Length: 103
Image (cartoon, rainbow, N blue to C red; front, side, top):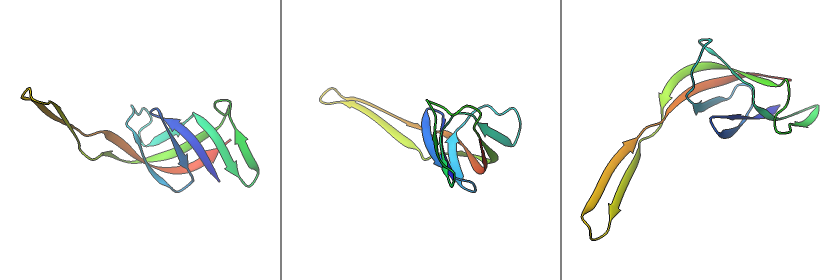
């Protein structure tokens, strides 16, 4: 069984037991994360597709850690004008383990 969820403006294909890095969000419950925007659920009973989301479907996950992604280097320049700017960025992520897909 697997599901397609949307969080942080991205879509992820998830299955129970998988470890996933998602965009960081404000947590109110502590170590439990619930994803409500489920777009598709597929398994032994067939495939259920939302329009755009499935009503009543949730994916539960457990928070493992807060991690940071790789550093992205930004370099801007204009040729022949001696204009150079360098910056960097590291994105914050939540590492979660998918526990249950419920309909």
